[in-house]
Amino acid sequence: MTTAHHAPGETRPGGRTARTRKAVLAAVFQELEDGGFAGLTMEKVAQRAGIHVATLYRRWRSVEGLVCELLAERSSDVPLPDTGSLPEDLRVLARSIADFYGEARMSCLIEAVVSAAARDPQAAAVMRSVFGERLALAGRMVRRAVERGELPADTDPEAVMSALGAPFSYRILIARRPVDRDLADSAATAVWAAARAGAYTRRSGGGPANDTPPGGS
Image (cartoon, rainbow, N blue to C red; front, side):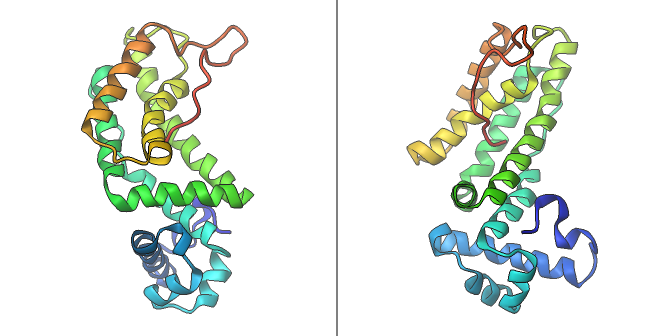
């Protein structure tokens, strides 16, 4: 399976490989919107992208590989703010996440990736890597807040960002309801209050003070 870190199109950004990859990922996105992950097949993607199905199998091996690469590409669409204030950063980021997942196709994508990860260990590894990288990047906001004195010095950045993403994961995957700006604002407010109170400080052994599962950002 082609991973997010070794995507075929990345080796020749302006060449045929890049055009093929773009067409394939666009086709995957459209197929997810039309039929969801359950209806996604290599044959349908190949037909929509206008390429031979053997090309898909050679480069991506499976539908799990396709959806994970699509997630890796799309996850960079959510910008990370730097407003000079953590509560404002959290609010802006949460609203960007809400806008991102407010599109029906994006909800279908995250559902597809979770389904893929449950079926394929390699897909699970890619999902962890993608979300892990996003958590690490978003954690810069928390580190800046610590430097400004907004949060306790031993605040765990990834724990804070995991807590921000968790309500979106719950709304999409468990409650199966649309995300909106109200959810974004309440998540940002709750995480800011908890972080200021020390809810996400590291334990003496080095781990975070909470065990919130990672959320998507």
